[in-house]
Length: 471
View 1 (cartoon, one colour):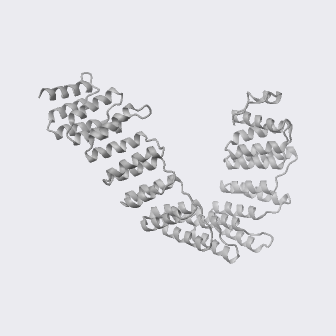
View 2 (cartoon, helix red, strand yellow; view 1 turned 45 degrees about the horizontal axis):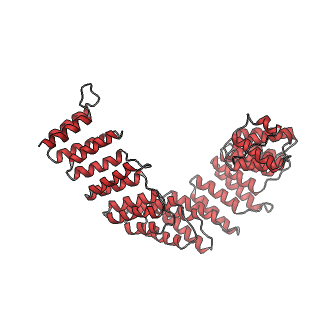
């Protein structure tokens, strides 16, 4: 979007006052047409709104008014943008401004306001605009009625909401569709009124309005969020029977519902269905599944999920390496680490920390030390206190406390201050090899390091190492 501004007097007038994004959009407008019309402006206002730039959209609307009186379409576009960005007061101000430009809200404009005000619980304003549109001779349509029902549900007036639905069903002039029913179903589900929502689903069927993907997804999400994954899975299977193609959201919500309910067999079955479909779950969802299967000790299945992924990321690799190390599968963990290079995935400090910790647990502390040396020599990755603590733990468990002391000295030299875990690890290591006096001295150093006459850590460690050489 970084376009140079054309040196027009019009843009020069506003350039210092406008945000950079609005200035760049103006450049595009004038590049598109030397004399932009209201359609051009409205198109770019809509673009700004869809890009999440409500302030800039309002700014461009104000510029447009300098040369082009806004029409009902441009007003409605900006009102929708402001409503979507929760700026209801500004949207209401625009409605009040419309008569100054000989504009009146149309059915689309009213529907947007009633819908968004209803969601916000502004019942009085909903009623105001409902009455206003009818007094202006605008007949409410199915969207208007659906928005009114939503408003009543937000206000917990469910009996009134059902009465409006009954009126809609009886009125032949209103063609009920899945949007209307889904709007009402969602309102009931958001309020936790599952029985009423299921009743609406049944009414859809009776009226010959078949539930669609959105209808099923609403219920799948509801049951999944409650941790009732099996019920969500039943609905997903019902979708398949009806020939409705499930979306990524359908599969994701259902599988996470099964995860919450702890249904391993069903999760694995659904993973297989996903594999055989054209749907691609996000890497975040796959990562969560691998981690969950690992916690359930289903390592083989988790590893198969990993191997079937098309685009694993660094987090995926970390999860798998950590899982394999935790279950004693050290060689496989190292293989996954080596795979990162083949997959062009850069390991992070977290990745190395997992490896260092795993190698230390395995007793392969020399290999862990080499990894830390690699990190210290790397231009982009540096060991942190966790890295050093993992290696310290490995040295101490191996009884190599001198190397642990040297490592602590290296930490200080590199500006990585030891923390409580660092001290405790080395203290326990010294005790483990019978050097209780040195452990006590280190404890006193830790406890009194802020005291005026305390021994600096570096000096104490050097003394411990010197004493060992003198033994």
